[in-house]
Figure 1: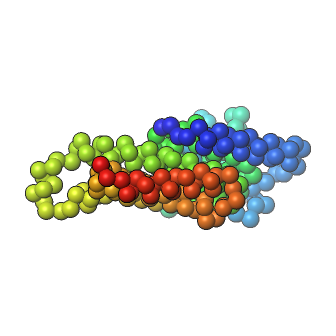
Figure 2 (figure 1 turned 45 degrees about the vertical axis):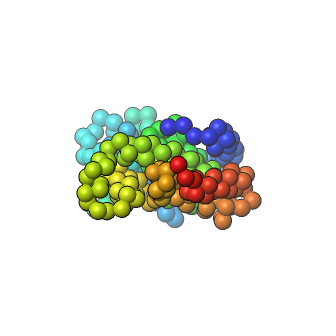
Length: 251
């Protein structure tokens, strides 16, 4: 899924800057037996289910319990090095616990995880990219990368809305819709492929004249309200103005 050149370039710059600053801060990190125990909050979330195998023991060769999906919330109890990677001992509600590879999760407990997740988002595509973007916005409300991620989210969702509009137009049968007596816009706004996006807290609006769905612009609005002096605010306002024009369009 492609987005604006500005969005990706600016996000890449912010991630690079954040990584550089983090590396400078921890060039000579203090060693501790259990660094996790000293943290005020050990909550995290699964961001890479390719690595998110919950195991009995901290080893890549240990028996697997389950594979956790992206978005699964967990709590960290400790850490251990084994097989060339770091494992975290975790609890995964309601009743699972075990060991998982460190790179499978992200959270505020670990410095630089917002930049790492932003890089993962950049390298993703399709629904997984949107899912990880949503996880970022939920997990890192105070990150300096938030405006860039919000801008990216809006761009991704507007592109998705256009694709879903075309898909719905192909699949919805006009005779069946007419026979039901329900208004046209309700069929589009209830279209089944919107469900998984709504579960991510994403909403759509519909122009009955053009028969096109649009992203409701929530992420762009957040940028203009909460980050009015950011570089992304100018771009976000352009997108909101464009959305207003699209909703007033007549085919």
